[in-house]
Image (cartoon, rainbow, N blue to C red; front, side):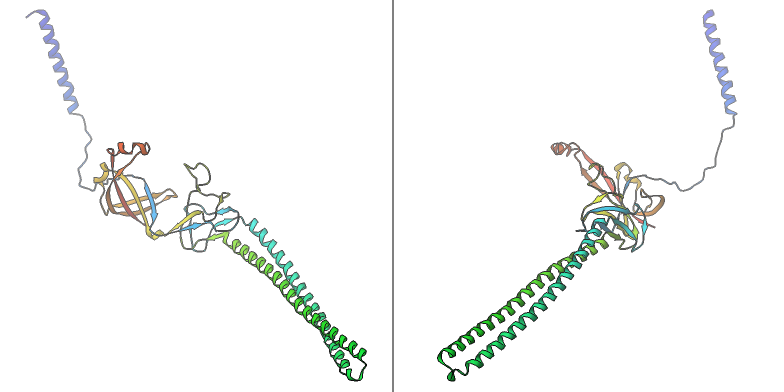
Length: 332
């Protein structure tokens, strides 16, 4: 063996000895250990879903109440009792209308009283005129009854007086009847205006009451989105100062005893879910409160989606996204 070979062999042997010494020292070092015990392994799947109530009441803006601007609005997630004020709208316009109608009503009352008084006075005057005409008629007839002892000319004159008195009596009677009809029509017209003003006043008073919306039952308030304010692609919730429209859905009052949640999970996590599993739920409106429930149903759904518009639907039929929908009931 050459000198070079001896050198290589010596270096290899030294490396082996050094490695054995290092391994020996490492084997003698302390290694942390722990006792194995049988227990329950908790596996959690975190998903996002939507909470809905099986029964809920939609709170809407009053119909035909004029301008609707929200003055007060309860906070989202507030717990309310039946009869609590949920929404209060600005009643300035309605109050002004009610004041105008009250003033109109007082004016029509005075006008109706004046028309009634004038009708009574006119009727009394016409009755007096008719009575006088009737008296003149009877007197003329009495004078004419002595025609046989009168000259022909005087008898004709008294006959003409009877005709004239009869004509005046008919005129007085006709005037009495026509004035009564006119007075009745005038009173009816004022009364119709008064009734309309009174109806408008009652309507304004009803609108004033409708501008304060109260909770019909106990529950937790959910404020809905205002689709006419802000960016229509990302509408914000109704808030104080917003303008609403007649019949607008502003809030919901769900029955908290019938809450259900739905969520979609990927198929890869489907095997980790089972009916009856417990669920912990946190609602965005109540971040400091944790609700509990259990899964009551699971069903597989095949969704065919098109994210590029209707022209790509046929192409996307082959892109089937398999998801699982789970439904869970929430109990307080």
